[in-house]
Length: 312
Image (tube, rainbow, N blue to C red; front, side, top):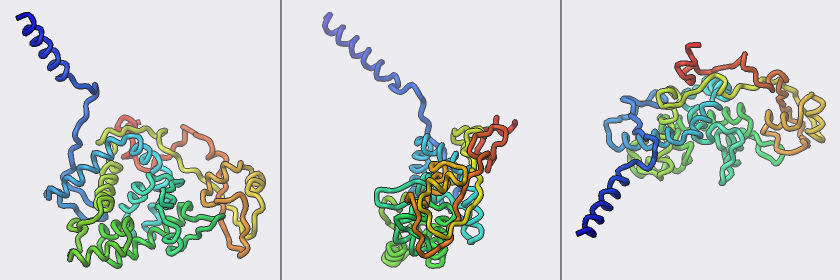
């Protein structure tokens, strides 16, 4: 009798312990927006498959806090450079989110397969789109030039498909693969194509990135102006000959070699031979922009700041 009572008490105790949450924090499902669009084209969120594909990426975007938060911070530095180039080339502004998911807006990004820069160009594709890629110069790390190259590639894709979703998918998988699948599966809609998981997720990651970056406060990302990475202004020096040592060049222009390399990631060697006498424009950061100044912060998009911050 005593043994049965003891077993019963142990069973109740175990059940009560199991009822307690092991994680003291609360994890919420993220409500989907009623409507979603990309490059002016809407997504039919009444379709359960599209709804769940978007839900997966919204969850990932919100619960990978450090990565998403850093993208918002970096956007303050790089969106002012990227947006005008997209506009001049007739590329929808939403395409700026493509480099967010390609590289997390890290200009130093290098994938295991060799794709580099904000827009993650492979060497051959970079050269095909007008970028110089050598041991000494790699313009995949030149923000303005690589963005121009991305515009060229995306424009070709749009001319081919007449659809920005397919153009973005081709950026991920390649024009040859997307064209082959469009023909084989007899559909011109990205949302009706059976593709690799990476490419299938790609568009929904783009849409999710847009949704979160347009209203980060709604998704729990709270930032102050001082949290955003500031643009670094510079003056340009033209170089048309060889440079024996970039360290000496940097010192002659009043900065360190580190500061020169950070401002010109496309310089990949300690020297420049330049036997063809090409003209390169080297950025020399202004000294006042090498320091953090809380009294003159630049905010590219006020929507990135928390409500309390915008009231000040």
